[in-house]
Amino acid sequence: MRKSVENLKTSKVTGGIRHPNKSRRKFQTDRFPNEALLGEQITVTRKTRGNNRKTSLKTANVVNVVLADGKIKSSEIIKVLENQTNNDYQRRGVITKGAIVETKDGKCKIVSRPGQNGTLNGILVK
Image (cartoon, helix red, strand yellow):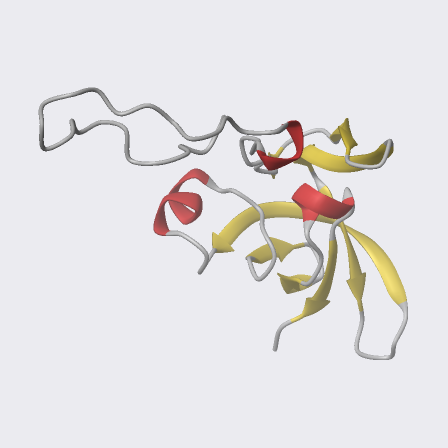
């Protein structure tokens, strides 16, 4: 998915066709967002700039929860309750940073970025 360079849809005042001044470079192109959903864990590895790699989650069913006493426990996700990022994400059950999910240990708020980090970390909500 590429960003548009300029507004080339309209024509010039004289009626001529608009031509772009320059084309996009490889580092200026965008990608489709990777939206983590509920399901058996599947990760995707992508190439990034500087010959680096980025791991992201396609689907996940387990979250690392920080308990009240400071211990970390892996807990299974039951369902996505809220997602304030986008109403469409809430309807579809997309897991992003700030989403509130129901786990076996209680309600949990996601504090990591699953589309960027490839992990799901959360804290319990009272």
